[in-house]
Image (cartoon, rainbow, N blue to C red; front, side, top):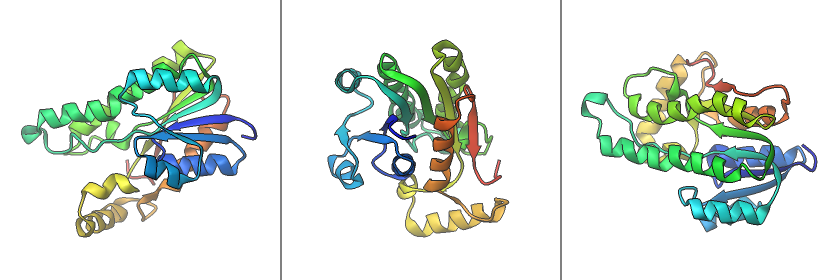
Length: 227
């Protein structure tokens, strides 16, 4: 990683921030983006406020940064959860607007400048077939489906995905604390490793994929064996 330049989109907290910290610890030159200046400043990394849903802003940002080695796209949304029979399809549409389209815009805007690899964060809902996740699974599945095709189209730039399971990050902040703790306990009982994941568990796999120069077009699941 030493002296390799890495841009992480959506890295002001959670898995994105943990990945930035892990990569920096291995000697990488890390730059992070997000929508909150306060959160970005608190990371301690060089940063810029960039809304990944704003294509013009993305084009301007990447043109100003110029060539770099690796891109990590860590955008999130919890929209689209719930049983399909009662699923608010406008909420699902927002899920695509918050994660799928911004991820595509970010990757496409970065293409003239990224030299070595692209890593996209999806989620286990893409393949988990769990009741209540058809909507959010569609968002992550649509993104994950594109990864192996991008890998062929964009070679020699490598393209991979990391698919986290139940990970204790701020993504869960929309759930009240007591309900979240109960849900984590239920998940931990089902997970072979008997705990929910940490952001650092996923960051380790992000770092692996950036180092792994003979891996492309793959989605690696990080779920403690839940799936």
